[in-house]
Amino acid sequence: MTNSGLRVRFAPSPTGYLHVGGARTALFNWLYARKKGGKFLLRIEDTDKQRSSEEHTQVILDGLRWLGLDWDEEPVFQGARLERHQAWAEQVLETGHAYMDDGAARFRMPDETLEWEDDVYGPVSFEGSDIEDWVILRSDRTPTYNFSVVADDIDMKVTHVIRGNDHLSNTPKQIAVYRALGVDPPAFGHVPMIHGTDGRKLSKRHGDTAVGDYRRVGILPGAMANFLSLLGWSPGDDRELYFEIGELVEAFSLAGIQKKAAVFDPTKLEWMNGQHLSRTPPEELLPLVATELAERYGINAAARADDVLRALEVVRIRARTTNNAAKQTAVRLDAQYIERDAKADKLLHKDLSGFRHALEKAADHLDDVDPSSWLPERLDTELRTLAEQLDIGLGKLLQPIRIALTGGTVSEPVNDLLHAVGREESLRRMRAALSWEPRS
Ligand code: GLU
Image (cartoon, rainbow, N blue to C red; front, side, top):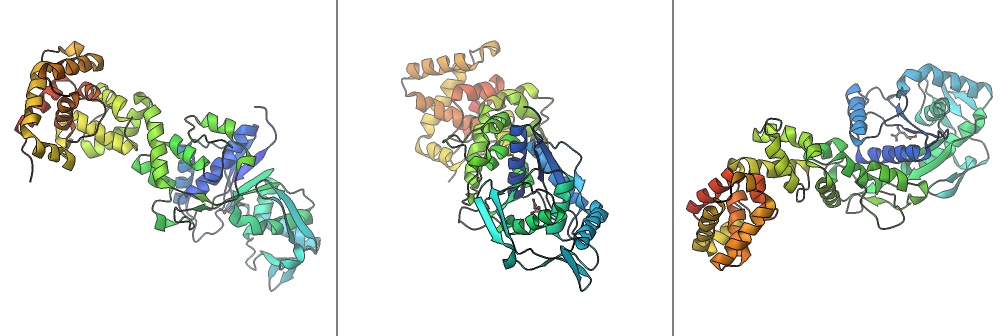
């Protein structure tokens, strides 16, 4: 893509963590810049010294990096630009577009129509006479948001402002400032708010709202970006899954941004994450589960890489988060993490002798498979042969093995499971389960 001269920016206030709404706005800006061969810039709006912090700035930058949203120039810190803002204010005062009032500089709203062609809303207009004159520089000589944002966007040569529609009513004030300064305003696109599944504005009440929360529970960055992209944007067809960020760049357009509020559905995010997980190669997943394996399960993923990779190959199909993939991996690698669930117990209650019979025969039969042949295809053949020999349905043979190996009734196909757990450990677990008693 050629350099188009397009420049967009994400301008977070570092007064809290990277909220999913902010991340979505950043993503739309980034996608648009990448699509058009433009530049994606960052401006940290840290003028509220009471509420802004260096820590929050770092968390926001980390969150953007994690999502893969790289920026093209050094971030601009708004707080460092005070003199520049004051100089712009002086200019507005000198030309009579602002006047002093109680020590503050107040912008004189023109008696004009302030209109623009919004990338999302289409033509929007406000009457300048309906908007009161407003303070651009407080009596302590600090600038207000609507003024500094214009000064910064001009200095950063921003060509497109894509931001939340909570800023829609700020835009006429900003356009008036552009006019007063004799500078062409950038294009504007206002993206819809994000609501919870109850239709109310997304807030803490709905659960996790910080990007970092999702990272911690094991959402993949690619899945998070995929999910965020569909909050207020639609490709125009039914496609929902984009496994490569490049596919999103390709599909993205401002025309696909919708006016109606988007709905943040955590269940959908988990589903989408499961889809991404099942497509992620085990080698890529290993570093993503390593910390959880070490901290929660005492498993050194580097030292047991072969075992971990074998387990990830199959558990990724059913896992919905990387933490869950780590848990399932731990169960396959270490019998102490087997937790017998209620459904498994029910089967033991119903037919304890059938359970033991199947396990005894399976252990004896599979003992004849030598270590080098302990592979999914061969194991499948052996299990079918044995079921026929025993004259029982395949399920009656497989379910006891699944329970003995995992403690539960749901898993990958049993031949894959046996392969993931490994020969010695599988045989040991089957024999150990022969003495299991149903719990009351
Ligand atoms: N700091 C503002 C916000 O977080 C930026 C608004 C803008 O993009 O102009 O809402």
